[in-house]
Image (cartoon, rainbow, N blue to C red; front, top):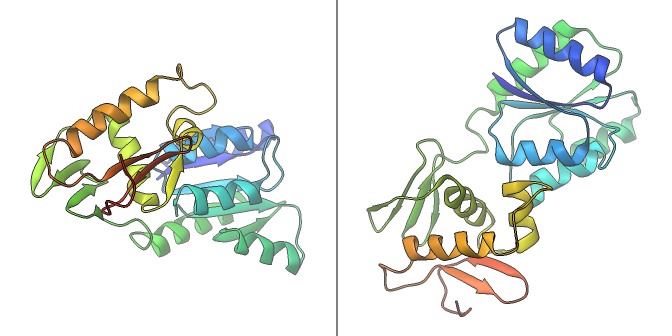
Length: 229
């Protein structure tokens, strides 16, 4: 499995990573909530191991943003020293899939991760995304409109997938920039240029525009003509 460990205790993080790599898993790590959220949004993982107490953004807020802002339903195993019913309920309300109370055995951690991956495989991530006659296949990274194959760069594909997952919501410029580049976005014109190229690819050859600019806010992927591009 490809796993993301978000844990600020470097000794524990190294111990988890070393153990899981010995089991054949591929591991990415983050020591704070902001970096962890960025990695979880821009990469595909089989599961995320998430500490509750993190610098920058705690585990509950990270999980909430991952679910509600990014529309990402990767299985999340929360690590915590808190074991009250209220704490567990709060975690589940924010989108956590399972809880593991510190201290724990590494074997139990692995068993819970395997169970989460089996239980959630294919349940939350659709095999395709559609808006009008535009279709995106995340697994094969194909984009088609009205049956016509559309070639996109990697960044254009990421932007389109984000807009399609959020459709018909308006997605702000800062949210798109953070999802693509994290805390180090390029100059202010970069996103505008990528949006222009994306619009040329998915809208220009067709009679009905789908990608709309909401001035002063961000962008929206929607079939309606209600918002001018």
